[in-house]
Image (cartoon, rainbow, N blue to C red; front, side, top):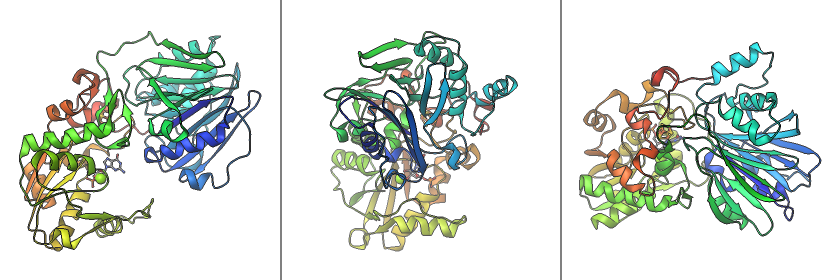
Length: 456
Ligand code: 5GP
Ligand code: SF4
Ligand code: MG
C-alpha cells in the first residue's frame, strides 16, 4: 500500500493528497481514499479502483490537514468496506488512520478485543489498530500510539490525523518506508519521495524505525517507541528489488542506483554472454541497464509493454495466464529473431510469467535465452505486507534452480546471491535488512513460522 499525509495551512489538503496518491499508485491499485480536516470537522472519501477513477471529481471539502491511502490487498479481502483511511471517534474527537504493512498478531488481538465487547466492520488488521487507539486511556496521542505499538507486532508505516495534527509512525523494524517532506508553510508524509517531487515539497528526512512524528502548527516533533527492541532491523529488500519506484530515494539511497548495481553484480556473478541484453519491462529495466553497462553487451528493447494494461479480468488456467501476459507484452521481432538474448527480470514468484515470456521469445526466433534474476529465489512467504503468495505456490520453494530453468525453458538461469543483493543496497547494513522471503530468517516471530499465511 501507499500512504500520504499533509499539514499545510497554505494548501488544499484534498488536492495535494490526490497528487500524492497519484505518485504512489504503483503501491496499490485496488482502492483509494482521502480524509480531510479543516480543523473543526473531518470527512473521508474513498472507493474501489485507481486514484483517477475514485476521484474523477474531487470532493470540494476545504481543509489543511489530510491523509490518503492506496490499497494493495494483503490481509483482508478486496471488498469496499476494506478501503482506507478508516475514520473513528476517540477521546480527542475524530481521528483517521491509513496503514501500509501487515500485522502478524491480528488474530490474537482481534479475539481479545471481541471478548472485551468490540465489534468489527472490516476484516482489516488496520481496524484492530483503530480499536486499540480508541480504547487507550492515555491522555497524549503520542502515548496512545506508544501503548498500541507495545501490543501490535509486524509491519506498519502509519499516517494518522486528528482535527489538530498529523502523525506518522514507523514500526521498530522499519519494514515499510515513510519519508517527511517540507513545503513552504507546512509538512507532508509519504511512503516514497516521488510524492514529494510531484507536489513540489523538498525531502526532509526518512521517519526512523520506531519513530513517532507529530506535525502541528508548532512544526515537527519526534519521539521514539521504547518498548520491545528488535534484535536487528527489517528494512524490506523487496522494496529495492521490485516494489518501490526507481525514482525514489529510500533510507538514503536511490532505488535506481541500487537496481543498476544489482545488474552489475549479476554480471560479476554469472558472466552470461549474448548478442543483446533485454529486460522484462518495467520491473527488469534498470537492472538490465546495469548488466549491459558492466558486460559491454548492448542493451536492446525486446518486449514492448502495452501502456493501457490496467487491472485486467483474467480467467484462471494456464491458457488465460498466457493471454494476460501477451496482452501486456509483445516481442519486437526485429530485435529478437536469430539473437542470443540475455534476459533480465527482477523476480520469479510462481514461475508462470517467465515461462510464458521465454516461450514467446523462442517462437519469434530467439536462438538462446539466458535468464538473470535480480533477486535470490523467493522461497518463503512474506508476512510484512508484500503479497508473495503462499509457500506451496512459490516455485523457488519447490524446485532447485536447475529444475526451475528446465521448467521455464531458459538455456541458462542465474539468480542474484544474497551477498550480491546486500552489496547493491549499500546504504543499509545487512543486519538491518529483511531478506526473509529468500532465506526464511524472519526478523520476528511469524504465524506458523512460515508454513501457512495468516489471513486474519
Ligand atoms: P511469477 O513468477 O509469479 O509469474 O511472476 C513474477 C513477476 O511478477 C515478476 O516479473 C515480477 O516483476 C512480478 N512481481 C513480483 N512481485 C510481485 C508482487 O508482489 N505483486 C505483483 N503483482 N507482481 C509481482
Ligand atoms: Fe520484504 Fe521479503 Fe521481508 Fe517481506 S519477507 S518484508 S517481501 S524482504
Ligand atoms: Mg515483472
